[in-house]
Image 1 (cartoon, rainbow, N blue to C red):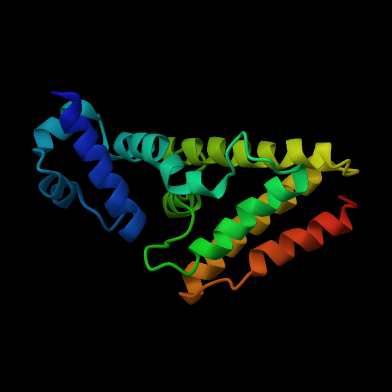
Image 2: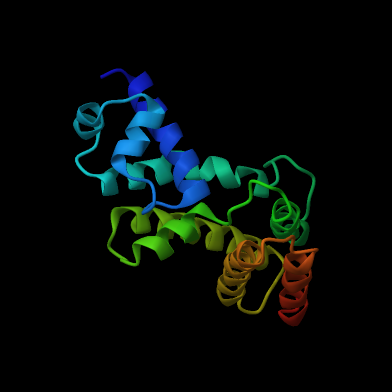
Length: 185
């Protein structure tokens, strides 16, 4: 098996899983779309669950990478937090927006020990850590608690946009602003 086969399978899975969900995309369709035999897929991944986890690990961050400012961007901690929510507000109105791939997968698997849920939770922990670091820099009284609230707003706002099929119209950024103000940040 070449890495090309693996890469093609993971890229196809990322597109299909994000657009349609994990359960509706069967192995046969996935392999056919990727141009990979089922035998090859199972030589690369023992189970579909393993494929889903690796797909989320390798392609999930690419879906949400634009939500974060560049490390060298001249933004203060509050603006770095706000940037995430402004991008979410912007993305929520685009035709290909299907929410957060990490939340989508975890909700669909409904198992906290599922390999893909473990990957999703690790990413959400990093997001919460990002918020906590900047909340600490802002001097928030409870930066960890604020970070958890901000992560909940991010996840809830993404779900709202998907459920309604419409833009958030700035609601995510306004809610983050309200939380930051209430926390004295």
